[in-house]
Length: 204
Image 1 (cartoon, rainbow, N blue to C red):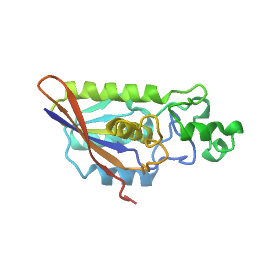
Image 2 (spheres, rainbow, N blue to C red):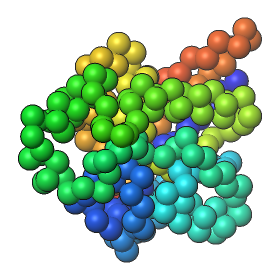
Image 3 (cartoon, rainbow, N blue to C red):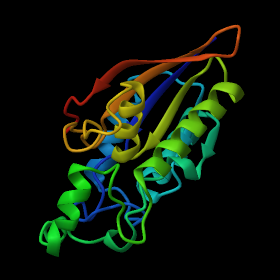
Image 4 (cartoon, rainbow, N blue to C red):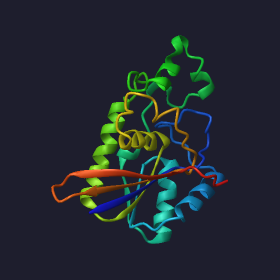
């Protein structure tokens, strides 16, 4: 049985110049327009969203408008950047000893101070995908989430790049971008994930 996933990054948030992990600004008007444009492109059985405002506020409105079931799941949250969360990106690049630069270049080897490891992010997202395949087998699910989640899914789908950096700075994930993937579960219960596409086209 094939379960399809369309994984959408939230639209432009307020304070987009900050490192937004668990920091929780809402979308701008432009961000809402981006999300409406992206999510009108498909037909889904249900919506699963990060609880953060830049995802959940739109998810609540969209699911109500479409009369579609909505699930809020903490596992779709962005990476917790700990003490760096909410700091200006321009400040982070000036940290002593190139702390942020080292994390950005080798996220598997470095953890934000007081924050979450990349391995933890991978673990919670793949657990979620497994759970959704079991619970909603054969459906087309719309996941509303964050750029870090989309990048870690790309890393998982393209096995072998986990210890490089392809899931972080080498992949652009614009506001409102979408990742399409399918997970086929065979008769033995083996899961076969497949990347179907990455849509970064402008929604401005």
